[in-house]
Image (tube, rainbow, N blue to C red; front, side):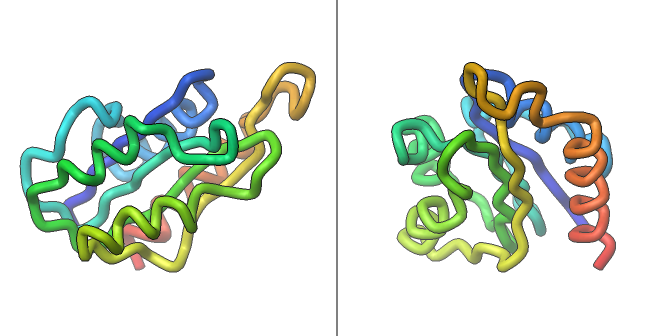
Length: 136
């Protein structure tokens, strides 16, 4: 199964998850500035909630996808809002790209809230989640 990991992060929280996921599935975690260059079976796409929305960089990345993607698996961090699943799903639907039902989400630190998150336990859970996705 061919996998790829792309993510956008401002604070580094989602980047930590991206690196754990990428290592677990044997690929490199790249930012959304790097377009997909080839077809993939699974795209792990990481984002965070900023002002209750998905960052414009994630929107641009999705709209620029020009290769075949079997499914997108959302992963995200946020301090207040639950996840970016619904917002990312709308963007993917507009491109007719399937979104997996499963996702990985954990709290991300923001100022004094959720200090230290994602933590080591979160990163291990993200890696286990990714392995389960690619191994069935």
